[in-house]
Each structure stands twice: as C-alpha cells, then as structure tokens.
Image 1 (cartoon, one colour):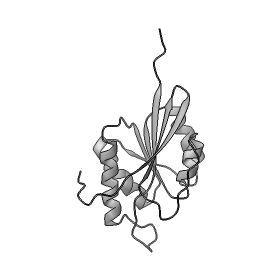
Image 2: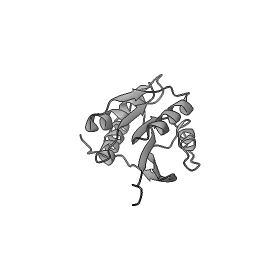
Image 3: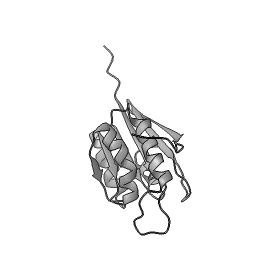
Image 4: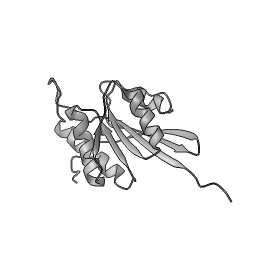
Length: 151
C-alpha cells in the first residue's frame, strides 16, 4: 500500500501598501483592498496559522484572511525569521506569513524555497511554497488590488 501524500503549503507575503511617511504606518486604501483580495485568494485554503509582525501594516494585511478563516493572528518578531520558520516547519501545518520587503526573501529562503527579490516598491507578490513528500516547489503569484473587494 502506498504511503499517503504529505502536503504542507506556506504563503509568504509582504504587507500591502502603507500610508507614506509615518512611523508604524497603517495600510493605505489601496493596501486595504489588496489585503481583502488576499483573503479572497486564500478563502478555500485550509490555513491553520496566520503570522504577522507587530507593525500595523502587517497586522492589517493579515486581518481579513484571519477573520475570513477564523484563525488568530500570531505575532512574531520581524528580526527573528529563523525561529519563525523553524517553528512553522516543525508544525507541518498550512500557514500565511506576512512580512516586509527586507524579510520576505529571507523567509522564503529559510523555508527552503527559491531565491526571490523584493524592492521597496513591490507589493502584491504571494510566494506559495508547497512541501510534497520532501520536495519543495516555489510559485510566485501576483495579487492585484481590486477597488471593489469586500469581505
């Protein structure tokens, strides 16, 4: 009898667009729309965890998905990507991780995904890492903001 297929999926994203020139800025209107669009993208995924840094822009990006799927947001330290990924990989459960332009590439790499780059201007990239029986695939999706998205 064949072993069952073991699959885990991580979604790693940068927070959505933020209001400029503020300490700990919240999401802009466009960022709020993109966060809602992310929730719609993931609404049929069996996410067991949602992680975001303590910053408003990350929390607000994660919130629509967490609410839609009735999953609590777990806050992690932006400077401790290694500990987060170690914990996520040990749990072997589907998760969304919201980070920043300077942390998302490291999160993807630490999880075993392909090399990725993000600039300060890049928003809307969703990195889907699928772990299937010991193999990892990295898929880069682009999530365009929608002016009519509601949840």
